[in-house]
Length: 324
Image 1 (cartoon, rainbow, N blue to C red):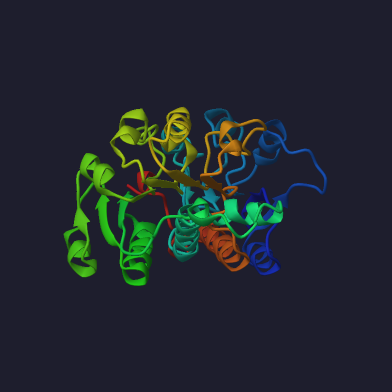
Image 2: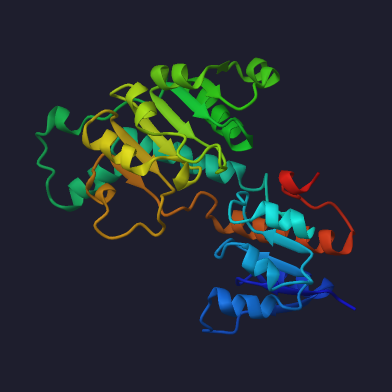
């Protein structure tokens, strides 16, 4: 008998067909209101749960799903998993590393360029009929090439960003990480620095750490005060890794020059948020991996993770904390 699973999102047809080949599939009904109570009802008898992280995996949710064996998230990040609760129940959690590294790195470089060269701001400038042709230095931006890039969190995406920055823009790259990577330093010609030294030296600072209890609020007022006044801060990790009020103050007080942000404390960003009025900030709506090709690959990998973990038929990308 095929294991029963619940899928909380629409899937490409090939991914849907793959899951139906190996599992009995439940999913939301068209136009059905989606809330935790209804989700719990669906999970009562399932062994597998395919999620995109729209709802958190909580102790209460797990209690409602006594037969649950595997939760597969269509994301690299898994801060929506209650890891201790899943471990206590022996529930496997999987995620989708590797397939999105290049796509996220593209967006990070785009945020660096857009913020430094004021691309979105000057696009509005033209559309609003303000371009008269005699603005001079008023429209100047900052160079990206040959500047110093500091990366906080040198994982797979950080490595891809490093290659683009170093070999595409001749940037001098340094990094701070929980553990040093001497082989990578030698391979790419990059330098390991303390957090403080990296913040003081860098023209561009890219935050790529996962959200954990240790990294929550990692970048706050003290860290912004160490940055150059001309520095540009890029956050493509999670909103909660930054003290957002400290970031707002750093921008309003011109402690730093600008920011490129794909993630926020509250998503979607609420109306009247201070960041919305700042020309020196470029924002995207948490779209790091959002291209059709990459999202389709993520969906298939999440499906394969779920099937392989449920049936024991192949490799599954189990999150590190649950792989022990």
